[in-house]
Image (cartoon, rainbow, N blue to C red; front, side):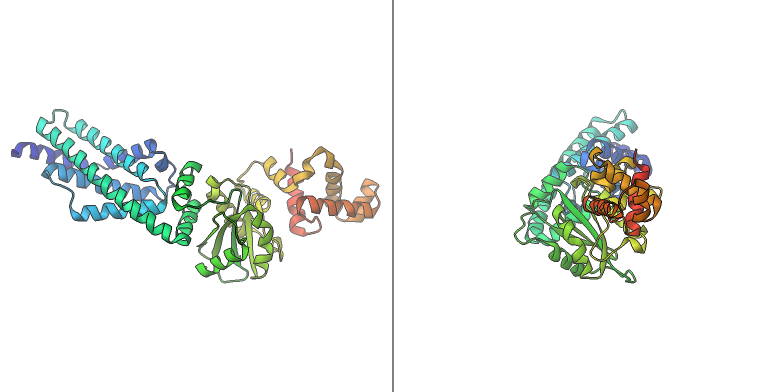
Length: 392
């Protein structure tokens, strides 16, 4: 090869490496064209940018020098592939991201060297084809090895999956189903996401074995769905079948813990469920917690509403709290609830409605049975009051 085309390539390389817009263009194209990457949260994009910057520098260097990927490059590619496999990103999507990046690289070079010599253009095509072929082989092999390791350690694989769900790295049911199938597990649907912490602790980091112990206390022997537990700072996070929410209060009470159980979100919104539960534990007053009872979706949404950052529309929050009381056939119970809250006592409410006090108390018991909220409890009365106030 003559020195002239190499010198021309070096000029292009220096210009592109110095221009941060090239990496930005690569990341933007991958984000737009590969659905799995479009679903990534902001915390993962710096990693994508770092890999794009490294890949850009290495590929341009190979083009300038007519070189080939070195053992250190292959080790890095295998490490990236292993991390992506653990993240749950399908290998097909990752390889597509590299193809998209290669296309952007070609376009950027063409924009800077519109009259590129034939030898340089051929060298660029040969380098990209060779690099993509090597990359595909290395990453596919690393994916297979990582999948085998994760399958052999099922508990760790499920914990990593729950970590990714909490972080919002799976924003589609399809991607989640693919990862579950590779692990050979069936996630609970409907599910209960329980976030729990010790009462009165100084908020030390939660030990994983404590979270696992809570999972074992709530698990149903012989259940075929995959439950899992992880930790977030001082809190345990447990993913369980939806029916387990009914046992959560007793399990936490036995440990002197408190918690919030979210059951109304879909599997692709576990991150939303976790944020709701964690925010509820951060903001709930002490009297909202009672032995044998956990906070629920309704409590979490009411607290979000009070905090000025509602996660749902007011009418939805009202339905969550009031439940069957919103049915026209339960109008008499709504009237009893309104009178009790406004009057301040069962006797006074009975006089307002021209009922016997015992009849009014019976209706309060029915409200408790239908909503799982006791109007005599200060916190639960507040949630009922807010719900009936914001109800359309």
